[in-house]
Amino acid sequence: MVKPRGICPSGGYWKAAYCIIDTHKMPYFTRLILFLFCLMVLVESRKPRRKRWTGHLEMSKPSHSYNKNLDVTKIQAGKPQQLLRVDEHDFTMRPAFGGPAIPVGVDVQVESLDSISEVDMDFTMTLYLRHYWKDERLAFPSTSNKSMTFDGRLVKKIWVPDVFFVHSKRSFIHDTTTDNIMLRVFPDGHVLYSMRITVTAMCNMDFSHFPLDSQTCSLELESYAYTDEDLMLYWKNGDESLKTDEKISLSQFLIQKFHTTSRLAFYSSTGWYNRLYINFTLHRHIFFFLLQTYFPATLMVMLSWVSFWIDHKAVPARVSLGITTVLTMSTIITGVNASMPRVSYIKAVDIYLWVSFVFVFLSVLEYAAVNYLTTVQERKERKLRDKFPCVCGMPHSNTMILDGSCSESEANSLSGNPRSHILTEERQDKIVVHLALGSESSARKKRLLKSQYFLKGSKAVQETGMDIHWRTQGPVGHVPHTRWSSSSWTTSNSTSVSEEPRGPPPSSP
Image 1 (cartoon, rainbow, N blue to C red):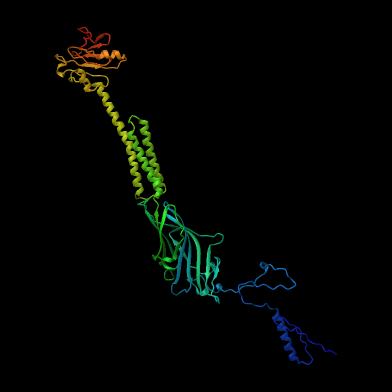
Image 2: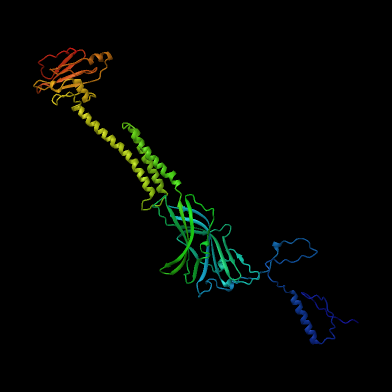
């Protein structure tokens, strides 16, 4: 008869399936030990097996009877081992707190220089800002000495330098499609912290030589909270720490030089801070202003000189030309000042434009002066014509006044005799000759050219096709008027006339 046998289960690493034991021949204590051992093997076989993390997802091997490929994305990976012991340290404090200042190296790569604004006196730059420091709290064991790279989510859990831009107006970290932040940690605790930033900073500009000026701007970096006793900022590779893209260019400026400097900045309430400078020099292109400012202003000045060749009697032409050039110069000056800040000193372009404006304005004043002087001169001549229109070689008491354009040389040529033989009587008479152009035919004019007329011993005055009015001034209150026309003579007197009018004298040979 077969005695009952005990069955010992197996699992895990144990390969035996069954063990047949004669329990009646074993003592009680031995059977208790055997039972506890089997119980321990059973519990051990049900525990999950802990393996070393290799960075790869652990996948269970499919059975031979199940040939369908498994979806890797639906397999839950085990919890990886936490290499960076972030939760074990207080990262609100700087590394080596209470000890010497932690050195933080900086390098910058300028991606683009977006704009330069003269009105706001600032510039906009996009750059990659990188920090280098060592934090032993982030050290981790590694056999391959490879670094680990993280995105911006880890930055909020560890300590990073609090660098800011001095004299910046606006700045932001790019966030498309995620925050452009990279954190790289090395096994020995060295950290690389990089971010992509666009910053608009102030630039003090001097426009005394505008548009022939050169401007030097600087971007300043400094720690906000840590003085030089806690944090030491420095350029990691000297002048090589600043790198620029070769394709950087501006429409109005030529970028001449990029260089770096560093110095200490003092604040009376907080102390000394390390400050880093990114300096660059800009030289302005002049060709744009030659086309938009200098050439138009020069042409307006030359156009204002055209009025000097226009007759001064053409008032609408000269006035419209002068006003047009003045308004055009005002528009040019306004356009230049609109793109410039309101500075209290004189710029080079202001001198050129205002000198041009003065030339244009003087051309208008010149015509105004010429027109005024001409008007005054004509007014004087009109008064002289009313009183003494033409002196024809006679004494002042015997003046012959001609209504017409008669010069003194022409009058003297008409008289033909010396001045002493004109009037010989005691009583000097004043002879006034009124000349008016007639509408006689040319034949009649030729006959009249040969006529000479005498009145009271005076010589004849030869005239072309005109009516001659003789006025003989007698004593006071006695002014006889003798008129002769081509057909007859008539005499009119305000009082009484004692002598009859004489007929025309015979023609001289």
